[in-house]
Image (cartoon, rainbow, N blue to C red; front, side):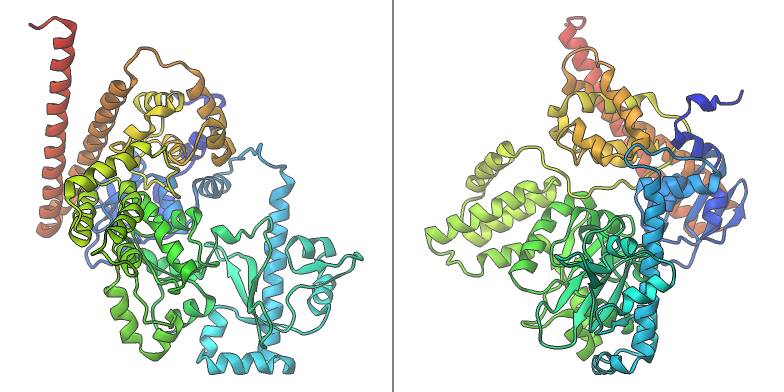
Length: 602
């Protein structure tokens, strides 16, 4: 019996009309493996294929270094380094499905497309000026002194903004763009008398592209001693400094392959690194590492290394990344740059030294320890108190119990304060801590059935109606939500203070679903125990689904005689079995406890 499209969400309709094999084969050469498909994983380097696509379940999974998988949405999100809403619209366009928008008028899409076009036209003009204009000689000399090759200049489409009041304006007006469009793109500035002029004059130009290679804005450097040295485009409909990573369109494929992104501060740092073969480097727009930037990188890699300038602002940005470790479920590491030098200096002078610095990067919390204690005398009570008061709040943020204990022990040894004293003080920080906004969390999907799961919806309903349970969700992992829509709601719920802020973060296509979940009352009491039971059940269903995929892949590798892959998959199956057994034991204990409390068992 067919599905009633009138009752389907647009997300389900897109999924129904999309074949995961067709989508993935546009990016990855797939080989038939029985009823499934196999390939080298596009997200990490490998010699033997460990990436599987399962047409019957409309899912994919990497059994190699990634050890992750998902549905067609999660693949596109990771492949294109875009968020859920962008992936939905990209797939909807391919499937011929109209995605309604209640957040902004339909005309905004046309406005955005027009801004992309005008920015690309401006980038082409600036690039041509750099290559051919006599007035750009100073800019060309500067790039030559920095050692940039012609290939690098072309790859990054570097340009020059002429030192004339309206050179770009006249060029673009002649090509059919309006003055309003140039203002909306941030290419012009308007004076108090209403006149307009070019924003970027006599400057070296750096076009800024998004992950899909569309030009969203510009960075610009002066060619004299005037200040500020660097400026950016203003906030526009397509350019948001806080969510942008310079060089991402060029770096994304390498970041996926290496499973590591190196985050630097400047345009020059990025360009120099790429020219010298370090193509997994991207730059923040200033030293503040933001939630959106971390979310973008998490879709590409599990490991992030920071190489920000060692000044006060850079140190502050590194400290904020302690929070991001919980999102990444991995350590953020910090490159300890030699005093007074930035990545550009190090790479140009000695590429091998840069490689060593990357390999020797230290966990961000170890860096924080060193930074906080470097100016303190830990032999004195005042130094001990200062160190513990600044470091304990950082340790309290760590979700992983083992890592938290490791750093508490380190603080005890370093400060000479007894462990039990620090432990008691730490409990005060944890108790006093209000539910934090998880910085930039983004789910890596696991297998996603077509229809929503009742147990997933029951879990979300409970969480939406009882926000006091937020501190009890550490064991609830994103991959336990196999439905894309539910997974996205859960991840954004962890970042939101209340239902209204959640709706503001959600794509409009999910508003109706989340409103329905929030309005249907959860019956009963003892909601914390109810949540614990639901989490166990979600984990059990996730492991069972994973075992089904492992079994399917195992059949194919055994047929092909690949004993190495067979052994690895068998080992993963044993681990899943062990986890399932522990879940069964926990459920049995919970059932016995419930019977005891009910009085049915003496």
